[in-house]
Length: 317
Image (cartoon, rainbow, N blue to C red; front, side, top):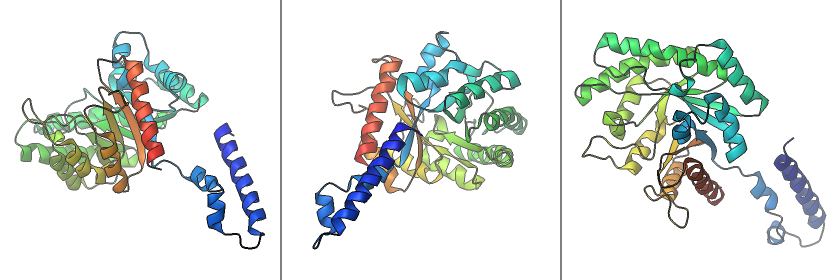
């Protein structure tokens, strides 16, 4: 039993005993108990509406430099940042995603250390919104192995891309078909297939929400990213509007961060505004730290993002 759970049960027991004793006193009321500080048990019982995970991309410079290996990432997340839920990025598997020994070793390391494998962000396997039917189908098939790997590792989800060339309507139609096919395979394996606003049409919240409506599969959803709303070199979509539009389909949230002010707030995104909106929508789930800044080092940026999310958890219980 974890110490925090032990402490919670101990405090709950003490509070219950205190309430039982005080309630026998004539004229005692629950309001008096709360005034006496016995509301602590109910406060302890409330859990934040989201958990925190670490996206491997936050350490991409370290990984590309060969200073960290994919197999060592989960334990670094736990030991260095106190985070026990992880999100992988496909290129860092270095084409070993079908190697049973590699997957077995990664699963063993996470299982042995109480780490939850949450999702795999898949890139470089083709565009699921490709308007060329043959290329689109090839992209669908290229993703099957990642659903297989996710299932073996105990992940719930893979993140894919819905890009394509053509008009917004042409690419949307193609993306609905490509994602629909892949989501059928995901459903058979009970693995979610989710799309991030990741540039181009996908960074238009209304467009991507339209794709979700078209696919209409409970295993297909979105991964709203706070910072990826750049439609083109000259056009940016409103990030708050975009997240709001993607929330009904969200199976995760990507807390993108770049820099922080002296109070520890992210300078490009109003996190309080975002999370008030997310909570008001009734969303609950896992929020991934994805630090992508340059002023702070990767580890410092991860810690700053986690501190901000920790604060929001406490403020919005």
